[in-house]
Length: 183
Ligand code: IMP
Image (cartoon, rainbow, N blue to C red; front, side, top):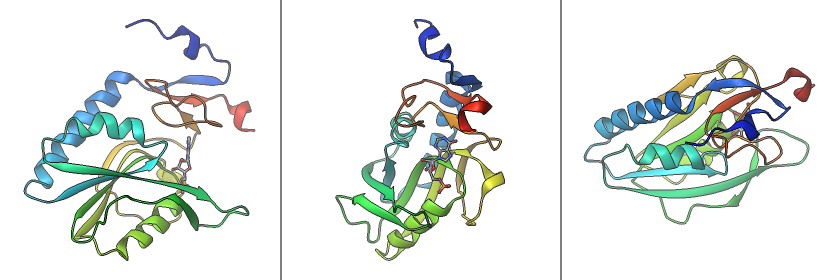
């Protein structure tokens, strides 16, 4: 693989927190666990655009089951608060299906908590969460996390789907930003 000097030398980046190899190993491990747990069930992987897309793409190839995927997009209401606006809803019904939400990161947990409330009203057979990153020091809403990749410290991170103003999603690793960037 070519070296990634262009992105690594971006002045906003501090250091690499998780390498491509560490992330790939974790995706394989989580995929194997999901394969075991959901054997014989009607599974749908649900991802919130856009951050979760990269993790989903790698993870799903380690899940050795018949499954479907569906996507949602959300945006926060101006003025904050926990409620989010669904800007793209799921294409298919989830009633009586086993839903596994694939997330890139859970921070306060408020977004996902709200979303799970909305999805539960559609009567899935079960609903669980798989997140690559868990910033649990900042958790406000208690969420059951069935599959967790890495616990990370309370730092803003980018890469592997995570962005700052839309940039950095394409980094093959997760990196912290320099303190002065976030103020
Ligand atoms: P919540 O605080 O758990 O509701 O997180 C809401 C969203 O904030 C996440 O889904 C991410 O899109 C974003 N977010 C939280 N922490 C980070 C971070 O460190 N880097 C990039 N995005 C983040």
